[in-house]
Length: 277
Ligand code: KIV
Ligand code: NA
Image 1 (cartoon, rainbow, N blue to C red):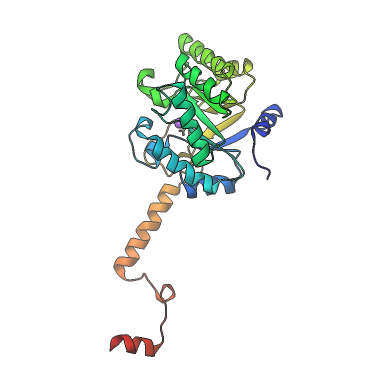
Image 2: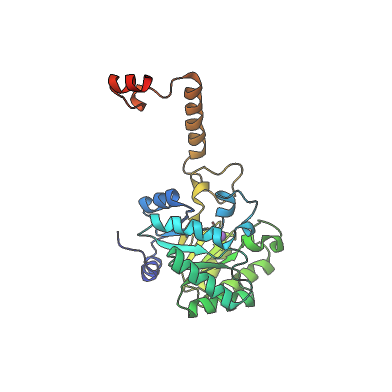
């Protein structure tokens, strides 16, 4: 498969071939995404919860995100590698946003960065990063980094006011120079109308049909514990399979069935006798 580039993504959208995006947070999940043949791998700040155990995305630091991104990059060669700018790494100034994005490119081999929101300050950051030559994917609708202000992790765009805000945000992010846009947790019919006004590819999550889809890998594989959002479809139940596997191991260690002869190294009798001396 050829390397996925921005022109390739635009071509997929133009020919109405859905773009497939999935998150990854380390070498193993990066390899899964690479081997499965997805188009974009997102090193999402959802890693805060998924692999670092934080309560929400705002807790993950830039250094932690860089560590995750570097591990993913070592695993991913064909898909485009996209990295989330975590909360706090671009809020202070356009200069900070560019410096952070450059670190993702330099240190982690990111090919694009994703920036949440469409406030005047966010749009200014977006333009600054694009001017520095780094492609930016926007993210509107439900933006988890500012979920508190949005009233929690809830659907956006169910009222006229909210739907118009999401539409205005989407257009503003496109006009600021984003190469693509993630829309999260917005009614499908509202997204369909917004898409008619956009030229850039729209990647949906809880947003109905779009130019592409994104899901958290651990959610779709059933590794995440507890309730997952309505928009998640579980394609596997790996969490249960993993616990079953470790339980079986624990049982066999305790009852002496593990290790068996085939898991041990043989030594000749004279070696054993010498050690016994
Ligand atoms: O961090 C993340 O996983 C995301 C996607 C779900 C869009 O931003
Ligand atoms: Na994110």
